[in-house]
Image (tube, rainbow, N blue to C red; front, side, top):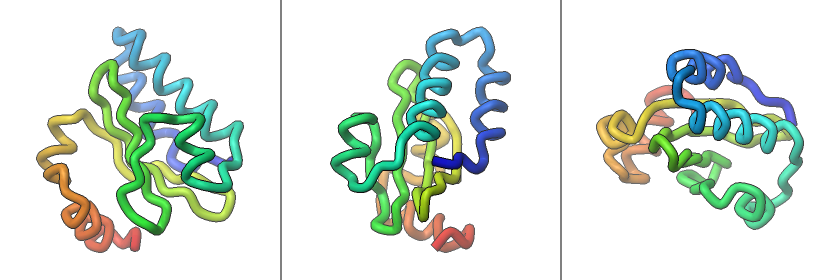
Length: 112
């Protein structure tokens, strides 16, 4: 699968280069996305148990547990696009742990 916005993940790795666990988790996420063509939510969850569907148009948050880093990705037509990257505190401030707030943010930023 083609990964669009990979530079956001690379920037996150550079910003946290001393955090070996986070770098490893980001690299694994990149490989998992690029090496798979998931056909269903179940297929995705089988590979990435941290994937949480937050909108029916194919938007998923990945929760990298080691550092509570949240990465929002949309899957569509053989491509995955990195939409948002941040730590859990930034996630709570931006999205308030609420799918309605996520939907509003996606609309406000022209993703849906």
